[in-house]
Image (cartoon, rainbow over all chains, first blue to last red; front, side, top):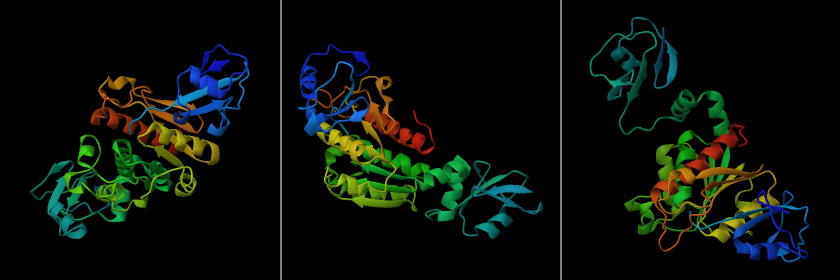
Length: 64
Length: 267
């Protein structure tokens, strides 16, 4: 699997939620694209990732 | 003979003097600038001279403002910028400066949204002044922008942005500048636009706190509709606060990306 342009160790039954947990990212502060499609936050728990998927995670930090 | 008066090109008779020109074009002018220098003596106008006549305290007409911008930017660029409608979500350190840069280059219409008021602690980095403390940021920003460009079209929304109103507030906008403070607000706005507003682009910001080197602040294209400015990591914390220089650099990265998108650059 590709995450942010780099190879990432895919695991069986990996969802967007479990991927975010592994990366220590808060699901409320990210934008997630899987194969160039934006995924709704409500779907993160049920969205199973495939080992061929390309995932882009944009994580926001505070300040504006 | 071709000369330029107040950034407009005219064809005049060869025998004109500076004072004759003043009497004809702007008799009440109290300052004459000939080819970049304040001039207090009458002289004969030469081919190609550039004359600016200033009546102190008087606002240029809408036509004059357009001429100034066309002279600087070319009419093609000016027309593109003048047609653009740009939204700014948040009028803090980022938004107040993005709004100023976009106003100065002659963006036609700005849609501004913020629910907040100007606080004394904002003055270390936000484009507000002592006399504006306690004012709504939408009103204070409007006052400041109209001082820069009196004919800017402005639509202000004094409200807290969320998924229920983003679509309505920014419905006529070509590009939204994400200039919010909290990371979950940033994510909510960007997610909403990418998911629901397929004609709208968004220029967001992440990572601008502190005083680390300026050179880590970049503009990154995520996809055709999302661009992110900042270093991606410098967040506000106890020992890393928001300071004018890096906030300003990031804001101007955002403004420049907006400008580039309007002019057809996609990177």
